[in-house]
Length: 344
Length: 268
Image (tube, rainbow over all chains, first blue to last red; front, side, top):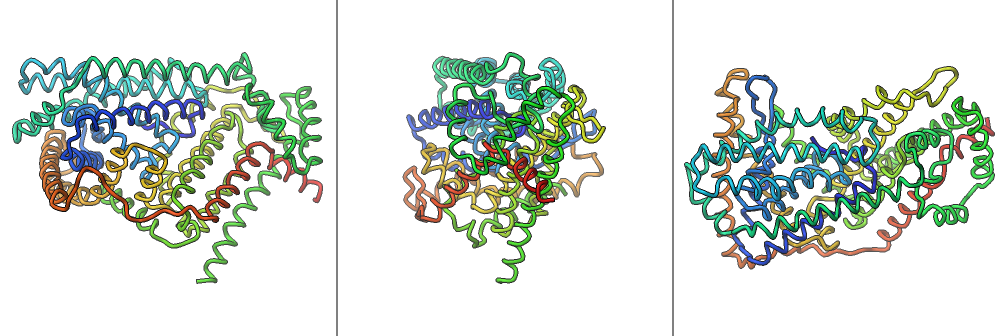
């Protein structure tokens, strides 16, 4: 499942973007260290391959529903983690742009959820050790199955964590976890079977592809894992720090946000560090002060007293204002359309 | 026929980006930064904000009309992918029953308010991302990213991927058609056939990559892709970006809907 912009807060989105961009930069550096020109077209075309393969549906046995491929694990096995991460990131970027899967802010999270776990956790920690000592088709299949399941479980858990940290959804953390993990256990199993099938197919038909690609890029496993964990730690700290910065304004997030609902000026105590500065600028740039700030202050005082029965005057002007703004916007659009049509 | 649909949609979005309007002529960097700014501003609204989001519809409407983009096509695409946000958001009305707003006797719970807020944000952010690609070609966005210091390898990866999506999608379409003709209902569309298809497709892809590499070598490839089209950040771009920034700031910091409402209630 793809994370969506609407469920994210800017702090969480930006943190995961930072982690993702850092990993992309790290992978590019790693790939540049032992450059293999042949890899560039291979990565590009394999990205297109994953993209196309994701569009093919197949029937999931037992359920009658249809599934499709994720592909992160196949890429990691064939290309090694660094190149695979770059390819996965590019596939998700194109999907975010063309199929609007999630959105641009959530893209950082999506690359993280679907790229980091297969490439830097499941591949080096599970698949690699399991297939090290000779690889029969059965061994390969088991390794692929386990690593796909683990990667998808971690990815699903990440989605839950991101949603929870952003605080836009009302779902309790535990409920969401119980909802997401079993679904993704099924998806992971299917993905694992397909991955195992494809890897064994390729191994039978052209074994040299697998051997040449994986042996050409020996994974300095210990280093990368250390770095990954360091990265995870940094992200955790950053998220924690940013969240506390946002949250410390109010002890009880829920009540505080309810109070700030309809009919009141937004942004009062939301950003503690920035708020005073912003308020100053806001006051300086305030236009139509008669319609805006004076009345707002009075109304918000009244609101506090009469809440929750919101003051009638505010909600009337709120509805009227919303209708006016929306119809004005639509009108602008129509006028421009007509104007353009007449011109051509 | 989902596959064909997805493929043709991809191509259609691509052709839209070759139009020649004011919006299309702007520098990709301008549009990319404006879009990112817009998305962050929209998402930064707190959970229960609804009316503060309305003024932001001005941006997609302006882009639709100035960029001459078919509204129905984009909206259909947005609705198609709204599943996840809807699925997660719909729990809000169930779980959050705190009474919040009273419209002439009808009580609305906080959950519904935050659900509407999520869906509005979803619509705004996804539409703006699609509009970005419809008014700026994908290679244009890649060039902008390169100027923003995104690693070269990732950029060439994106450009390569984009170039070969169309080639491989056509090949895949043939394979899928062949499978559909040989299968009956769901019989024959199982995982075994699928793995075979993917495996074959993979081998063909690798062989193609080898041919491409040889072709590139014979044309003097040395590990770097070069872009020909030069960039120019013009005065219009600066003006556009400044206006976007100012308007976003106004919409975020001031209660536009409230102002308009009070203003119009005085008139009427």
